[in-house]
Amino acid sequence: MLNVISIIPPSLEKFLGEFKDLFIKPQFENFKVYPLGLQLELKRTNIQTINECRIKGNYDSLHHFLTNSPWDEEKVNNRRIEIIQKDSRTKSRPHGALVIDDVAL
Image (cartoon, rainbow, N blue to C red; front, side, top):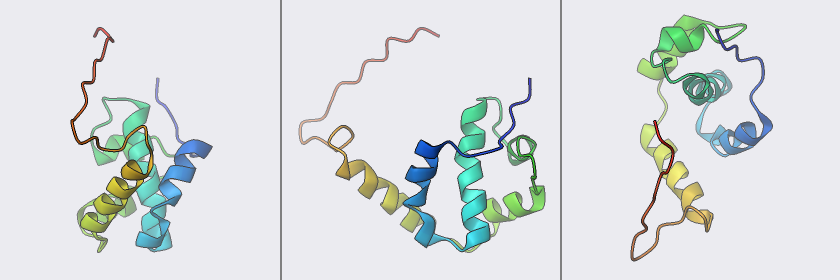
């Protein structure tokens, strides 16, 4: 079954809003769709299949955003790290951490 993006969940919208000032409006709209499209189904690993999840999708716009649009990936990554470091649950620890994933595949 094809999952369709009709709205961004409020929790993801709030998180992605932290990046809004790094993009112009059309870029930001594509930025919001990309991580949600990846989450909908792990098989959706290319731009075409992510775009097909949108009700009003424009493949060329999403493709251009990911391949040619002049946004600064380093600034986005630095912002992501800042957000992670602000939260005590995800902040780096000086002695590291052991993560155990007990989900069987």
